[in-house]
Length: 310
Image 1 (cartoon, rainbow, N blue to C red):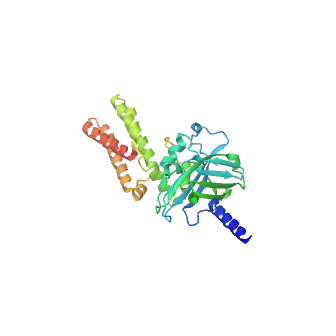
Image 2: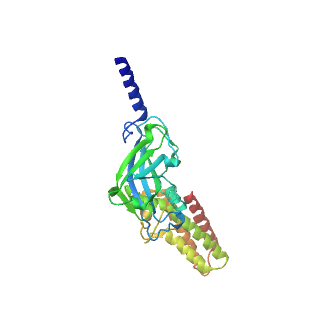
Image 3: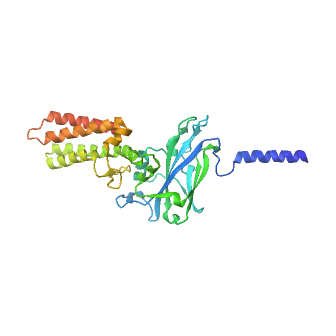
């Protein structure tokens, strides 16, 4: 009888070991650290009409670190939509979504990765900052609401974890860029990662100026060169990482000094474009422009912008 009991106890222990238990299965394994959860209540200046959301739907973002630095083994990260889920008020569960173009572009420009893009999490590697977006019912976000983030990022228990987040810890943001609050310097992070959007605006305006010059439309040419100048100047407006030319006073204004402190090479490219555009503007304002200088400056600006856009 004792032998049977011992065998049963051993079997039970093995079964429990295989199934895991508790909400935190990270001990001694790969760690998941939730840095922030954010509800997007869009600014009037942010156009989400193309997102296909129902009137009661809002985007919820979770930013989290996945740390495999203390583990020797590599981990394959799941790219399925149910790899990260959020359950609100123990009632409604939502899988992560990519959104349409606007949200997808924001995530691409954010500097963060997603589970679907991560692939292999290498053993001993530095923590990877990830982001997941969910389209949730705004009626779930009532007073006293609770959120459970369910991570099932791998086939084994290394990347399974549940984090409970109180509704009071969910921050409301007007722009997706608000998730950068998790960074040590949110404004600097936003500026660096929105430079690509500014570069695209500048490139499009430069192309429009070139077409206008060919058509001898000096007014349109000069307007677009002014846009090229202002978009990369220290000024009174910001640009969102959503990449739809969302210009606003609600986000950090451009600062070349800030870019220089974070990304000197990028700051050098900005300076090159600024100087080239200024050469074009000053020459074309003359009664007898030096068109060789204009064309040379245009080529410099265009090639530099292409490099900035990758």
